[in-house]
Length: 146
Image (cartoon, rainbow, N blue to C red; front, side):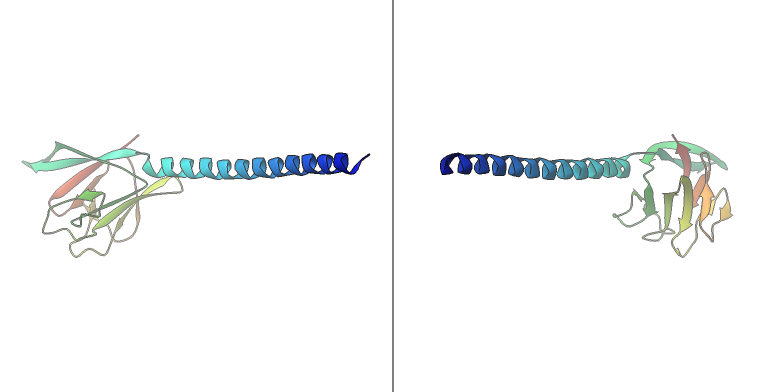
């Protein structure tokens, strides 16, 4: 075997090894991309909605306003909340509805005027289910789960 043939075989083998390394790196990056895409889809996924209700003659009537129920749904006056309400009784970050380990939880965020769940004050994180009514000031929301 001549020196030229040996060098050719070595170049060919190094090219194949380099191509293998590139393919393995591409596969690793692709798997990471797919995992990130799945995680982003879960964050954007809507799990239900909050239906805004108005109190008319002591009855709660849907107003037609619906808000998406995301894994973390914040309610308050601040424009950074998922559900922004214009109410003097609401704090800037008043309450949070969060999905934790397959259960929905309502948590008051130390608001001045408190949060109600089915006309009962919420003092600790509380499990909520579909049909529950959340009250913040004069605003009411019914939880509708999908």
